[in-house]
Structure formats: structure tokens, C-alpha cells
Length: 236
Length: 396
Image (cartoon, rainbow over the protein chains, first blue to last red):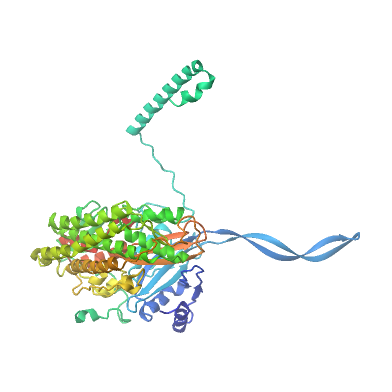
């Protein structure tokens, strides 16, 4: 079994400008992954398939990382005017400040790769889009591994990543006229509930009328029972 | 094994054209006008709501486009909104013919994510239930295939008779025939009693007679051979490239069984063989399922003999309300349909940040067009039946 480092070294030896970096997985599963540069992804994929014999692409999936507000503490040095013994002086002082900034989000495609020929794997690699709104193109790996065909269509459908070079990029699960991408974290279900009267409505109306009638009957009977017996009256 | 099994389809072949893995393009004869037929979504052979848009030249299939999504309920989105344990009963509804293997795959992925150990008795119970599931899935899949061929009733009822016995065992142990919800992270929900194990032994003793019967009934049946042999051929190199797994892949002569490759659970303790196909056609897929049932019976006999005493849940196991460390894990098993994988990303919260099912049924349909092109439209039904899908898993 090749480690992630070995695979990275092999890719870099063959394609010097591949731009591969290791993404550490802190979980106990220890399945570390490689981040590929989208521009070089097809060449790297071809190398993985033809030279390292990773012939079987098992799983392709999308992950949505929305824009996130991060608060970070920064040490800033700035002049502060102080009054010491009645004399105003300006001193440089280092203070800690909390600054908030918005970390831009992205969409990610994750690939799980195995080798049937050598019975090893998985090799996990990821591709990242520039942002979540207008630059969501990634190169399609369907020409390299056919198994990506439906899965990339599914990601296009549910996450909205556009795979350039895909032979047949259509929605897979949602219908063609559907506009949004339901697997995104900020997806809001459309408020398009259409009310249709059913037979159940009549039953419900009768039940409500019945309850109202019995309640008024109870209220009419209540004064005669006296103040102490309200509890028994309510249970009937 | 013959020489074809040595076929080195996976050697690097850089001289092949780039589009070698695309479906073949065939032209209609002369200036024939193509007939577009929508098979489904309520065609009796589609096992549910699934559509194939077929373009025909006479009876010959020129083009076939599968259409999905009729049963889509966004299982993955639901799972991201509920706890890890909350998704366990939902996994039963993916491939509702094999709920226990779905449970197992999901439990395995979460155990990988949290580093949870599983006691030995639970591992044996999982193997027993997984193999019983495989037997009943393959039996009913064979039954449905023959049913679609026109042999209405008999083989399917024979298969269902055996399936009933296995479902009765599931019901006795888990309380449900199909929606079992039995496995937990770190073991199984309840222990099997001695009585249940004895009943299982009795059912397993009867299974070789069943495979024998099916074999005598079907294998040399003239009509079955005429209809299935040489139909729907799937090349091994394309099968691997297209992510086909399970009996379909092995019927194409590729020796890849995750029980052997990963040896998850306690599978490396059992002695069983991996049957491989020689002709890569529908008949091979039917035969492979039959032979796999026999291997499953072997595993069952060994597991029922060796099952140790002990707890069925790890004493330190956290079942509900736990928060895995941030990170991700991919766990996969050899489900009766192929590789069933679960990919989980944790952000440290009580719900998975990302929950992904890798459905074998959907991946196996990638090559449906390749297998059907150039064949008769009547054979499309058989080719589709030999893939063995469940729409609950295809559409999720």
C-alpha cells in the first residue's frame, strides 16, 4: 500500500508543476487526502490511472463549505496617548484585538480511488472551486474513469459544481426545470405548498364542532357543580 | 479457471483512444426512422419507478438513456440534519431487500470515524446476518430475472419460499422482517439466543438443497440458455473503469471481492472462494449469483460453528449523543449488490457534516447502455434484470 506521501512524490516526479498538497485528516480513520490543482487534475488523474494503476474510481462526492465568519485575535501595536503625572505622552502599546473576517467558502469534489489490479486503496483526492457562486467549474474526470459519469451528474444536480468536459451534464435526480441545488448548506425549501381540500378536512371540521359543543355544555354545567369539583368535570 | 481469467485488462494501455470507455455508437440500417420508446417508469420489469429512454431501429437498440429520480428523497440531506444514530433506521430503506448489510456498512463507517472496536461475537453475528442477506438477495434476484424472462411464478416462488425462512429468522432476532435496524456502532442491538442459533443452523442445513433444486430446475433449461447466453456482454476493462462491483464485476471475470480485499469484520477467518465468470454475459451473472449462494452457505456453516460467547456490544461504545473528532472516514463492504460505501465528514458536532452513500446499484447502471446497444429490445429487460438493482438505493 502506497502512502499519501509516496503518491505525492510519484506525481511530482512525473508532473513537476502538478501542485499537489496533502490534506491531513485528524480523525482516527487516518485517511489523508491529496488536494489537486484543478488545472492539472486531468493530467494527474491520467497518471494515477495509467502509471500507478489506480483503475477503479469508487466514490465521487461533493462537499459544500459555505462562507464562514471567523473571529481571530490579532496583536496590534499602535500609539496610545496617556497622561502620566500630568504630562501627556504618546507611547507605543501592543494590544490584542478581535477581528472578524469572512473566510470565503467553496465547493469541493472528493474522489475515492482504488486499484483492482494491485488490490490497494483508497487514495482520496479533492478538487476545490474558487467560490460558491460564479466560479464553480471543475474539470470532469469522466473521460478517465467512466464511473464518475453519474456521480458527477449528481454533484452538478445537488451541489451545483459544473464539470467541464463531461459528455452529458444534466440533472440526475431532480427534474430538469428545477432551479436550486438542494444539498447546499444554505438551501431553503421553496414555500410552494398547494392547499387542496380533502375528505379529511370535513372529518376535522365535524370533530372541532363536536368538541366545541361538548365544551359549551360543560361550561354550562360547571356552575351547578360548584368550585371544588372542576377537576372531575374536566376529565369527562 | 481458464486462461481468460488471466486477461490483463488493467495493464496500462496508453495507446488506446481516449474515448475507449464511451458507449459504442451504432448507425441504423439504411435510412430507417428511429422509434423512441420510454420503457418505464411503470414498466413491470423495472423493479420500481425507473425509466429507460430507448431508441430503436426495428428491434435493435441504437441508444439507451436511463432516467432516475422518481424515488429521490434526499436521504443524504435528511441524514445531515439528524444524529449519527438517527440515520441507522433510514439505511434500512436504501436497499430494502438487504437492510442488514446497509446497517453494517454504515456502522463500519462510523466505527472507522470514531475508532470504535467491535466485540467478536458481534462480528460473527454480522457475518451470519450478512451472508443470510446475500443468500436471500441472490435467490430473489434470480427469481425475478427468470420471472422477467417469462417463466411466470415458479422459480420466483421457489426463491421466495427460501427467502421467507430467512426473513422469519430476521424477524425473530431483530423484530422486523425487512426494516431491521439491528446494528449499532460497536456491536449489535440484541444478542442472539441459543434457540435462534439452532433455528439458523436448521435453515442453513436446508439451503444446499435449495441451490441444488434451483440448479436442476434452471441451469440447463434450454429457453434460459437461449435467451441469456451471449446477451449483454460486459468487458472486464470497461467494468472496472465504470465502477461496476459485486456479482456483475465478477461475472466479467474480474477477481475483486471486498470481503477478500479488505477483509473487514472477521472475513479473513473463513474459507470461501470467489466464483468468476467466463463469458461476461447475462447467463454468467445468473450463474455467479447461484455459486455465490453456495459460498455464502460455506461461510454460514463455519460462522455458526465458531461463533464465540461474549458480549455483543463493546462496553465503552457510545451509541447516542457522541461527537466524533473533526475528520472524515470512508467505510465500505461487499453488499449483495456490490460495493456499498458510506463517506462521513465530522465537524465535531453531533450530526455528520457530510453523509454520503456510495450506492452499488446506481454505479452498476452506468454500463447499462453499453450492454444493451445492438441487442434486441426484448433482451434489454433481461440485461436490466441481470444488473440486480433496488430503486430505493439508486435514487436515495
